[in-house]
Amino acid sequence: MFGWEFPPFNSGGLGTACYGLTRGLSREGAKVTFVIPRNANADYGFLKLIAANIKVKLLGVKSALNAYATSQDYAEQLANVKSKADAAFYIYGRNLFEEVERYAKKAAEIAAEEPHEVIHAHEWLTFKAGIAAKKVSGKPLIVHVHATEFDRTGGTGLNQRVYDIERAGMHAADAVIAVSNYTKNKIVQHYGISPDKVSVVHNAIDAERNASQISSKSGKTVLYLGRVTLQKGPDYFIEAAKRVLEKEPDARFIVAGSGDMEGKVIEKAARLGISDKVFFTGFLRKHDIAKAYSMASLYVMPSVSEPFGLTPLEAAINRTPVLISKQSGVSEVFKNCLRVDFWNIDEMANKIIAVLRHNELQQSLTENGYSEVSAMSWNNAARKCVQIYSSLLK
Image (cartoon, rainbow, N blue to C red; front, side, top):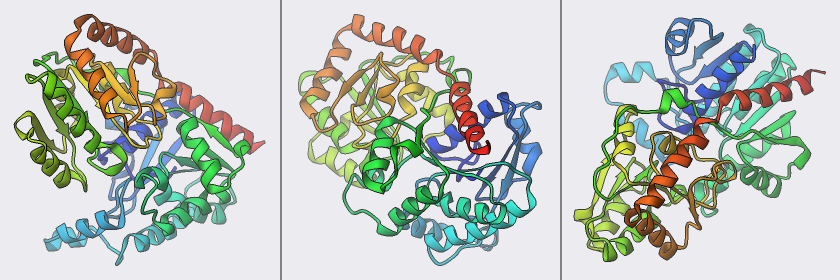
């Protein structure tokens, strides 16, 4: 299995999803070798992360990439490598696409050495690696689409090279997994893939791992938590905050996360005159994320295009009410939440105000959301993957 993130070597939802899925696969009896683009001392570190009876082997390949990297992100990472020690640890190509090619070459070597029955590649950065591994071993290839270039760019400024890699991977694969019907429709519409080739395997949540014992709701606090990028719709959140504050001046808003739009969003809050009511935390680690959820009266995911969206499930399991964009995959499986079209700022603001003003609504969303999400399991997702594997091995 090829991926770019795996706890604790992760910065976003992809690593969390890979963790949950591989843990579920192990419970289904699968033996997984997981390859990540960094140094990792295989087995013992990972066994500490999960449990001694979980049969997952972790291999590492040196790289500077992350799961949602863009060419600009990559250039910034290169600029941040200042010490000789850092430079020795990372072996960089001149650009992101050279990294993808180098990783694919290493993948072919690993495929020749590691016994396997199927190849499972997560996200576009690993698709060439999956194709290279398939050429060496002849084993079936499954590509797992967690997001498309249309999601990452909001449909504007499409990177043709990324799109071409995505399309080549999907066409070379024996099967394609999409994290939602929302994503499947994009794959069929934009990449020329037969719907019969695409299976939907929704993400889930590890309730025990994500639930927090912290409970400290703090006034009328509204939380945005995610990458501060076009895809996630942080600018719509700020516009909604302005409208909410006109009617609920005691409300406060937290923007937790980092990304290429962070500066623009901070400037927008200042321009709208609400800087004193909007707090920017930057990137948060797990414990601080739990604290953020525990403080919030409402979690808002205003994504422009969200293939799935794990954070609403994390919020719900932490007993925080949720408002999500209808343009998301998670809306297909999570019912006890509020929904809104990302562009409908007035409706978004009205629903935020409703939760802040009405304790009964807040309590209902909290209790029913928690109960619904608690019943979700990665085992179901893993079982569907095993069925796909089995169908290809007949």
